[in-house]
Image (cartoon, rainbow, N blue to C red):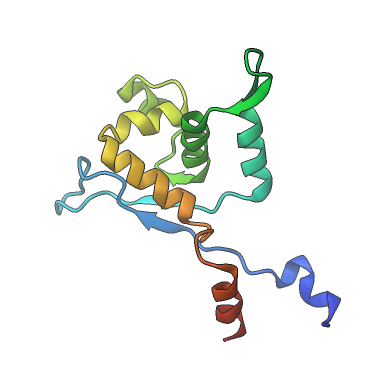
Length: 138
């Protein structure tokens, strides 16, 4: 099989943060879209976000997850920069929460969907496990 010590936390590689131009409506002095810094959301964080967005529906007798709220919370959790908790930034957009602030800053639906898709796929969940295993071997 293998050495158990290889599974110890100190041997685990950490994902590097990535940068993404979330909207074309905010630009730097050279006219380039501002880059947002994105981090990987952990499994534990993801479960907590899902739980926060899941409610029991008395009419159907089933649990329902508010997908829009979940994705907004997920995107907010993954965003390192800009600091979505900054009161001045929130006040400038009239937003009270990080997830509302994202929707205000990225107010173009196509850009918002692209940002959410980028954040969601940052974990590389769409890459087949066989391909990831092959990459790991090389």
